Each structure stands twice: as C-alpha cells, then as structure tokens.
Image 1 (spheres, rainbow, N blue to C red):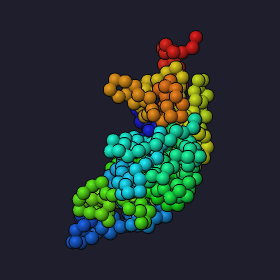
Image 2 (image 1 turned 90 degrees about the vertical axis):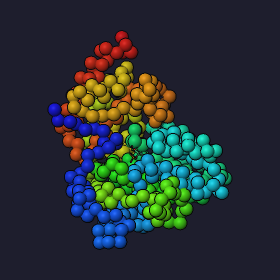
Image 3 (image 1 turned 120 degrees about the vertical axis):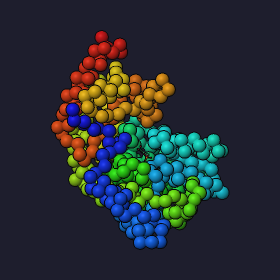
Image 4 (image 1 turned 180 degrees about the vertical axis):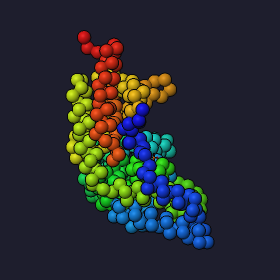
Length: 382
Ligand SMILES: Cc1ncc(COP(=O)(O)O)c(C=O)c1O
C-alpha cells in the first residue's frame, strides 16, 4: 500500500536535491566553520553562501540572520532574548491564544519569572483584531509576538497591519513564520524579528533561523563560544544549514503555491459535501495554501485519523491524547468554545508533491470512514 502523506504541516519529505548537498557537507567537506585550515574555510564559505540565500529570501542583510536548531529555539530566542534584553524598558509581552506551544510556553516560563503576558483572543476564523492589539499595548510593553500563518487552521494574519501598530507605539514585533515561509511573501518590513525553519519546506529537521533587525539588542540564551556574532553559541550545523538554503531555493516558486491552492480548494469543497462538516479557518487568500481543517460532527477526529492510517493515509488532528485525557486543541477552542467541534477536527496538509489522484483516494476512504464511524457513534442524530 503506497502511503498518502497529508501531514505536511507537521513535517515534510526532504527533497532529494537537498539530501545531495547535505550528503556532501557530511561526508566530503565536513570541517568546522570556525577552524582556520582549508576544510574549515570551505565550511565557512558554504555557511556564508547559505546565509546569503536565506537573508535574500527575506530582503535581509546577512548579519541579521541567526541560525538555530529550529523553530522552537528561534521562537524562544526571539521572545526570551528580547524580554531579557529590555527589562529596563518594561516586562510586558503580548501574544495570542493561537500560537504554537513553543511561544505559549515561553510566555508561561516568563510569567513564572515575574513577567506579565497578555494572550489576545481571536475571532471565529482565527484573526487577531488590530483594535484589540492596540488597546492592549501599554507603556511597559516590550514585545508583541503573533504567528503569521496558524499551523492548525491555516489562518494568515494581516501581519503588516499588526506590525505597523506596534511600530507606531515603538514596540518590537516578532512573527513566527514557520508555516508561511516560502508559501506566502515575507519581508523584513513585516517584523523586527521573524522565525523560520527548514523542515516545513522539504528541508532537514533541526535547523531554523531567526531574523533580527539590525541594531536590535538580544540576550543570547546559550553560553558558549560566541558563534553567530555572539547571539547563538554552538558549532554551526553546516550540512543542515546548506540543506535549508537549498530547500528555500527550490521552494520559492509561485507555481508550487498555485498548485497547492488549487488542490486545497478541491479537497475542501469535496469534504464539505459530506453532511455535518465545517471548515475551520478562513477561505481564499487568507488561508495557508496547503491547509484544509474540517470538523466532522458526531465523531472523533482521532478515530478518523486512525482509520485513515490503516488505509495508508497520514493526517492529523487538533486533539492530542495526553495522559489518558483528550485535550481539545487550544487553537480550535480559541475560535469557538465548542469541544465537540475541536474533538471532531481533522487537519489535511498537502505539499508540492501531492497529486489529485491521492486526494481522490483520500476522499473515497474518508467518506467510507465517516459513514462507518457515524453508524456506530452514540452521538449520531436519530
Ligand atoms: C508555527 C510553528 N512554530 C514553531 C514550530 C516549531 O518548529 P521546530 O519543529 O523546527 O522546532 C512549528 C513546528 O511544529 C510550527 O508549526
């Protein structure tokens, strides 16, 4: 049975061209970029070229890019690094209720240290209100961190508008663009700090970067040899970073986005033909090009996913089974306080490799699965 992989917001298949360049920097040229011999110089050169590719993709300068071990570390660095560096100005952070756990938990960690954090609500499609943001800004607000495209429901915020409000009030603005990078235009005009990573765009896991606007002081989180201009210590992951840059070069193509958008809309329209289904998140341009998140009434998303998995189809759910209790997704609960909708949700995320044939096979399996589960569900009407 050939796998149909529709969980590309969790992670993606590494492009073979990315694997080739990574192989080279693992096995052929493997020096430490800090070494002064020729192998070290080769590694340093490769690192510099990769940095330029990633900086150019955002319209940034090379020295505004800090490589990290991924999106989690970049978000931690952005949030804690900024709050610690600006303690003399204030101790207030604003973020939202629909952030990735690494942002929410950075907020909680800061609260435990005595910082004050505001978690903004979102509307029924997952949008942050610019008016609410402005109303919550205070004299002691140091940083606002708002996710660009949501990883669960695909909502793309009007980041420029939110960022402009912060600029007017002289407050730093960070956005987590892990899901949107290469899928929607991102420039340094949009934020003072931008988080990106490689494994959402057919690059390797364990590599990411933080863009930090020139002149913005940041407190490093790691003590060490002072790599990355003293902002992130640790021997640079040259194969990973070179692979990241290759993935960006291959990914920056409008044709991929257009293809995914068309497939996404086809999938959404076809799933919504199943009775008692509801789309989570907006439609159209303000939705991530690869995301379809649908709630199925009367049944659990987890049961659908497990049934699809037995048929070779990988999807994911907004509910995570943790310590015997089913926790509904914080994102779905933020758009509507309805645990049934949250528990009944399934996320399908496509990639540039997804085909219409795969979606048709998924739709057939999904319809049969939903029918079967609803027949045995105690919640089904009648
Ligand atoms: C929106 C968002 N932010 C941050 C992360 C964390 O990135 P990483 O897996 O590279 O640590 C992810 C990935 O799960 C994500 O989707």
